[in-house]
Image 1 (cartoon, rainbow, N blue to C red):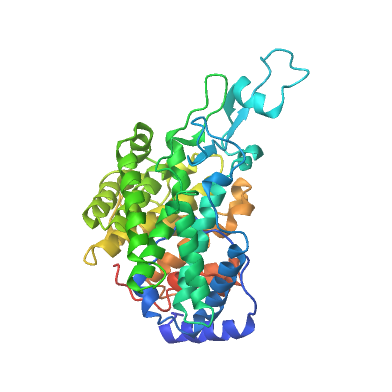
Image 2 (cartoon, rainbow, N blue to C red):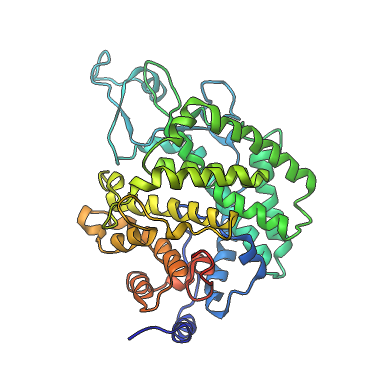
Length: 423
């Protein structure tokens, strides 16, 4: 039996009554949220639980902010803590050929003495010691949820507004705490030949898309806390960073990557260009992706061969799809007459084809149950864009995650409130 819009709305309204509380905090892989949709605020009663989670997440994140690159306990090779720094997550020390292996050197000596080797998909826990990547992620999430919460016009809206602005200032603007405009020490490879940043480090700032959404909402919502002076300062930062993204050898290499790295690069560059007001530059970034990497990323049945070949294929399918959907949403925002979700790869597949295929694969097949929830925002996004006339997307999410109605993505990814303007 088909699902009408009214029947789905009635289902969701009933579902909301049966569900209480808020969803536990989770950082969604990637997203770009149309500021016009948020500022109109016509969300519907079925999003009340999602709105509650957004405010709860904003409050929770604000307990640990603000965040800055200077908070890390390790200094980059440059000697300047304002330089962003992270260690390649899958690289491990091999000290078997270093001197007396019965007594390993102290931790810091290991970083410069032992060769490092890659074990794909196996996280080295000491990567969290530096954790600029975690700080940036928390900052972008906190900015996004505080900004959206500000639009709800509750009694705490000024607090949410002040929080969002404070976090942006701390990371990008204030002299004492701002990040330098490069990722030269991102995902560094350690070892005796020196500590060098790699192209994959550009991926670390993929949440710039959330920052861009937030800044657009603050601008268009005429935030009094987000002043013209602050806006100009952020534009100055983005101008320098965009120059680095487009000229540094490791950044250019990342932009040419054929897999998820190339997808995230396109979305990130477009986001930075949007903040700058360079909409043509942003459109060039998304156009280049859809004319290049996208064409080979999805085969005829919807598989993503480059992601499926990884040690965590279930995770990487959802991971790349989140970036593809985000890039398409940015393209739609930049040109309302464009149809990125209708584009096909050389294999004849659309974004929908890839999501539909990923829904047929159990995470248990590759022992990836911990990544199960990563697919749900993608499924909801595809339902919002292509429609869900038979309720298959709704049932998939509901069956796998009964409390899905509490998730913030329901506010902007729900297929039961948005129109199909991106088609």
